[in-house]
Length: 345
Ligand code: A3P
Image (cartoon, rainbow, N blue to C red; front, side, top):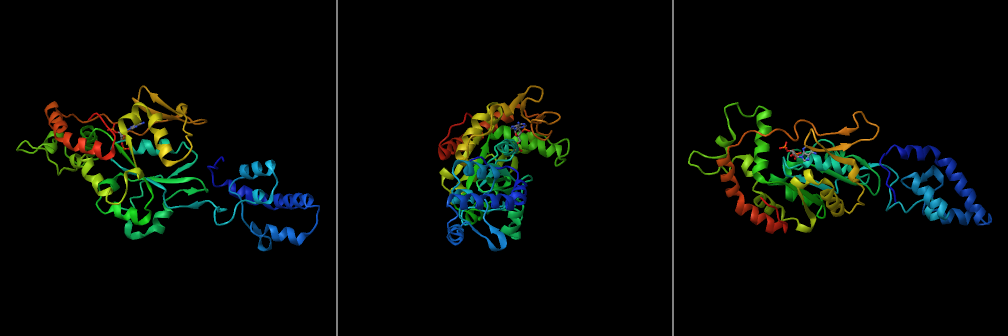
């Protein structure tokens, strides 16, 4: 079944429906040799109520056309039971959430997933479970895009991964929700995080990466958020109190740059949607040094991520890098075991 991506198509169906309905009734009457109006109406009662035109529609025109042409059987023409199929585009709570990790490629992943018409993504980060939980689930639902039946709703808020209360809150909303975690070498992630903080003016110009990452006594400053976020095992442990690994998919942030399609195929499989992101839609932009998305009928015909993604990193001296690499090793190894996936960090 081909899923409609635009909710406005439903309006078109509504406008044309009275005409369509008349044709259908006529054909069915014909099929039944116009034997009896009453029995026909009775048989159709499960599908729609004639009075008041409380009609249960199939969600998209193509589906109607497909079923109509294959066999004009009442069940298929008028759609399935109301309990399984809604006639409207609605805002649903998410089926999947990209929970982190900050600076590992979460935005790129979400934008790539939009290329699949079966997936609808919230634009800005909703920050519901970490900041706006007190506003309630209805508020959260309003932040979601409108979807048809069969379309999957997804959002991303990387702060969820490191916020203590979030796993339990998400679990209380849905025990079977699909969670996606993008990871990369925590040392590179820390530099990326620092670079972003500098660009936002959070540190003055004489603050170096080294001065934040390494204490005066030479030990690594685990409490500094740029370092702490990279202790993936510690954060993931909290999630595993509520969710099983089968519900958490790990994306390799480095491969998302070098071979996005491979990572995206795995994500689509995990989300149980057909693989509809074509390799032709994403290409490596040589001048940018990152993949960009090709967009038909657009000027320019591609979309690269803004300057805040794929920045030139702040300087970090090799001694600090080696120290951090060494520091992270046991945590990384524990993380590989926990997720049953190996990375070369
Ligand atoms: P850098 O800016 O350090 O290179 P997030 O969206 O989670 O904040 O992650 C930002 C990171 O996404 C960037 O970090 C970059 O490495 C990575 N990334 C992955 N694919 C990208 C793409 N197509 N364009 C730009 N950055 C991408």
